[in-house]
Image 1 (cartoon, rainbow, N blue to C red):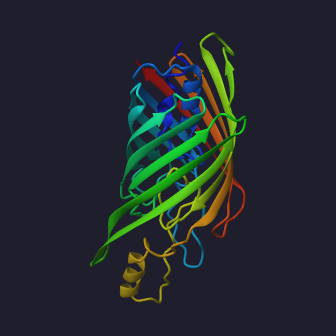
Image 2 (image 1 turned 120 degrees about the vertical axis):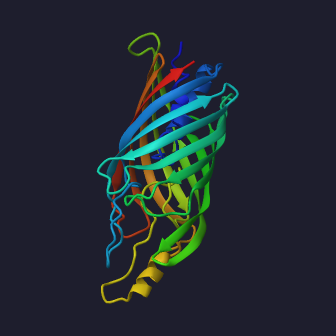
Length: 313
């Protein structure tokens, strides 16, 4: 039966990973069914909308609005039976103002899922951004992510730690400088996976996992950190037509370093992950509803993603 081996495709396939990742849930099913005995290649594609990919709108007296845009994410990966893996993903944004292929991700990590009482893992991701008008400039191009879930209870508590850092050169007219910075987040979550075997035919499985997550941390810069992808963190540019050009350049150069925040409670979310596996194929839709606690727009929002994967042994 191949139903479990293709569950691990999307650890970093979509940067719409919220307080818990779909891949963590899928690796949990792998562990429960003891089917991760072989190494394999994975190919897949993700599709959805996410407020992290908002329009790069600059307003003189308003905060950046949250704009939902649709994206598609092709991914390839290799997963070794020991738990080590590597993935590469590209991101294509529909209705893009600038370069639609605005991001490439390269990840390496390790997941430990052999113990029935807990699930844990760690990963490193390198982000490469194109010069796209749709995504604010950010120095955050490295990420270290770790998670832990205790699985012995019916309601499973978990915690994720996320640290992002990097640097970027900014150039406005004749002025140039190098901006460096970091952000970090902690996510506390609870969940319960419902597993249904042989639903339609003998080699299929359903995994349905509702979860609640509370995100706490900093939000100095725009980034695709897994722990927090609800709102663009890039602050607005502040100027009007009466300002002189040197001041415009000065304010623009302050874009990546202004609007810094302390460690705060950032958002509460509810996520429903559904995975259907049949043979070597995985179909995995997911929907998240969240309420941000920071910024001017604190209304309830939601976003959807869907993923299809195929395993090659």
